[in-house]
Length: 251
Image (cartoon, rainbow, N blue to C red; front, top):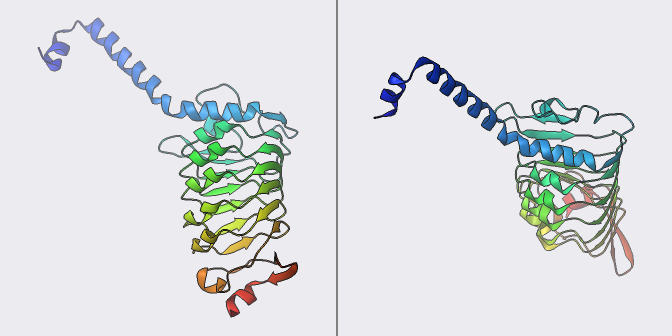
């Protein structure tokens, strides 16, 4: 007996119960997709120690409304988090590794807060990420090499933190990157050769670090879209060399 004939011979009350079960199953399973985002957001909240502006007051355990939480924007189709912007909120804490579970996020902004500790490498799982803004915090440790997995990145803004170590060797794999801001950290080493593969770069700020070496002599040709590198100081043989965009275009 096929399904259509089975439904035809069901008593009305059994048919009604069956339809209620189907509706309940559909609704509960429709909510499964955003549950991971809900849990990730609560994990991020759990690492916040000070919230002077009360921006996370709305971040509670309600499953159905996290897209309405302050700083959270969801896509209309999948109801997944696409933007998380908590900039200038006075937040104090560390960044939870659970941020890596916000797999639909395109814009992630925590600028102008007081986050400390290391940037979790789990950020490298955010393959849709286009803008990463963590400037003016107190992040420490290295720039996670896993960030180079985020191939859609257009903006990396890590200015004004306490980051150390080298610029990741695979920076050149970010072919869509057009803004790179790493000033006012404690970065060391040289600019990796792959940097010059970032042909979409328009703005680069690397000043106030401890970088050494020379910029490529054909910088303007290697990075044809480059408009602004500010005042970049690179040390070579104990000589300070200041490059401006005018210099790069004239080479």
